[in-house]
Image (cartoon, rainbow, N blue to C red):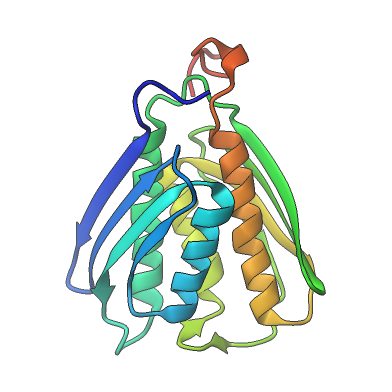
Length: 200
C-alpha cells in the first residue's frame, strides 16, 4: 500500500568541514544519485538505496583531503534527519525490521526498531583499515549518526567474514533490507502507531 502523501525528507547541512544535501524517498524504486568524493562509500550508499527500495540522493563535498571522517559522519547525520522527516509521525509503519544478508563468505545481520529511541549496538571485526579512500572504522560512526538522528534502535553485526569489502557491504545491505521492512506501511495498522503508548 502506497501512502497518499509521498514520504520524502530533504536536509541540507553546511559547516566548515562539509557542504551536503541529502534527499530520501521511502516509497521509491531503489535509485541512488549523487556523490561525495569517496567512491567506496558511494558504492555502499547505492547498495543501501537499492536493497532498501528507497530513492536516495546524496550530493556535496567535504574536507576529504584532511580525512573522510567528517564527510561520512555528516552524511549519516543528514540521512538520519532526512529519514526522520520522511517518516513523519511514524503512524502506520510496520516499525520492526530484520534481515540477514550473505555476501560470499561474509554474513551480516540487522535488527531494527523505528521507535524514536536512538541506540546502536555494532559488532564487526573488520580486518582492513581502508577500502580505497574509505576508512573501514567509519562504518560504525556512520550508522551511529544515522541512528542518533533518525531515532532508530539498531543491532548490527557481522556474524562472520574474511574479506572486509564483503563484510562492510553485507552490513549496509542488511541495514537497508531491515529499514525497508520496518518503514513500510502496514495496512492492518489503520494509520495508527504500532505502540501501546499510542505514539512513536
